[in-house]
Length: 301
Image (cartoon, rainbow, N blue to C red; front, side, top):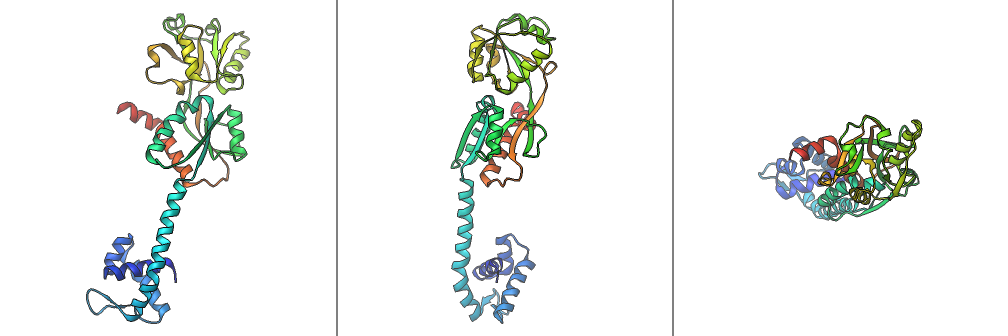
């Protein structure tokens, strides 16, 4: 005897109709008929009197209904509660210092609107630290630039990770075409910490070209960096994802896709790790918020 067979039987008994039971359970009528036939074979006799319409229970059917109803209802309630509990299971997510205040924040806003009772545990760090958190099982997933080819991680790319030059307004760099990084190092830099991803990429490019540069202010937050740039203390290079609507009123923003590499950013998980329903829901919110299609839809709306 299987629970699906008992569920079909109880529905047909309550509704006095196999076709209506199939509709309620979202099953085909032949499937419900087959379930009831199997029960009748196991019970050794008919459970319904099919001569009269609507169908009625036989004495054996009445006895089975009394025993099966609390069992089916209990299991169905258990499944619903288990699903609700799994959706409320805490999701542990990490992201880099830059993305956590911009890209991840947007996705979390959407996630919590969809699942107001969900629980999140959020951590930040450098890209190296975040990937270690994933590798050690400290978090379920991370939102980062691509970790590159790795058998240790699964990576789903969601959006281009471009860099931009950020200047105060007005500024000489806004008045001339930006053709080389040599033009940028003429000015003091306001940058994130030494171990952050974009700074490492930028300084590697400077070194490759034999340039010298001066980091005047070093901060972890791109929001703070943008404020110091707006004061006129220097210029910065940061990910385009850190630029928010309205920033262009105080800042000059110039794309660096021709001078610095454009990479993918997205969701990193540990290869082979089983994720909870809540974790999958968060990944869906990240994808729906940050993918190019989602951003185009938001812009057109």
